[in-house]
Image 1 (cartoon, rainbow, N blue to C red):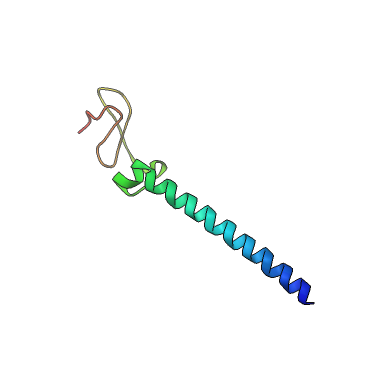
Image 2: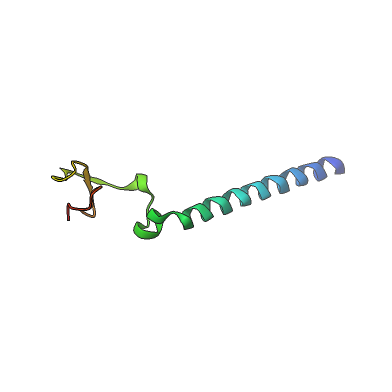
Length: 72
């Protein structure tokens, strides 16, 4: 009985450490992601308008920016 509890605690500790490492890695990646630092959202969370830039033809996002930065 006691051995089962010990194995269970060891397993839980390993899972906890694995979870903490995963969170640390994700947080570190977000700190180094320029898009998150500049716009407080990841690149795939950008919302686009139904317009295209007349210069480069790319979509214009909710901030009025496009790939060539001439849509402002």
